[in-house]
Image 1: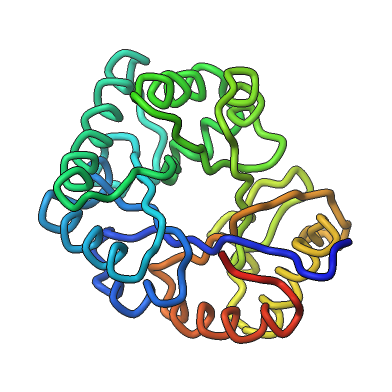
Image 2 (image 1 turned 90 degrees about the horizontal axis):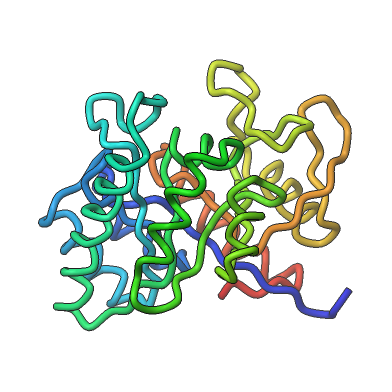
Length: 247
């Protein structure tokens, strides 16, 4: 283990919470909703300007086209229609980025799309084709050892493995369902220990108590959590003390 480790910290933004100005100073990258589950041209523009001001890397956060359910439910949609929707969503963000002279850094699918692409090859291939359609190399934020990361690596797409600071894991590395009272981590010290174990030892303690291998390069704090800003402040303070650089 090197003396100093490093980690990227990201959050999903532009989703109607309105706390981006408080989050941005503590992020190194962000994922901007671009119309599938939330967001429109105005919110995209506002968040891009904030990201530019704070030198935060910008990613697209496309979703199943389902604002009614905030992109949290799997929907019955053909691969062609899903690709068309995702392409339109990312293009909406790219237009704003072009006007603000900001580079698109990565793509991170949202909600049900993220979860399904992690295990379903048909859906994963749609996201991979979306990334391949772009005119310059774009990174993919996705879970370690998932179907989509394996497909991306085979297509020479750079993958940034993502973990979650404020969520508990099952032994199969899926997130504990929010229906379970132990799904979300709220205590700052518990979150810090959870994060340190993952970054330092590449292991996560599952809700069963079993330690499971987990490699991450970016850490997500859910921007819609009530304590999101407090968690981010705490991690920004404590991680450097533990010789982990945020970048």
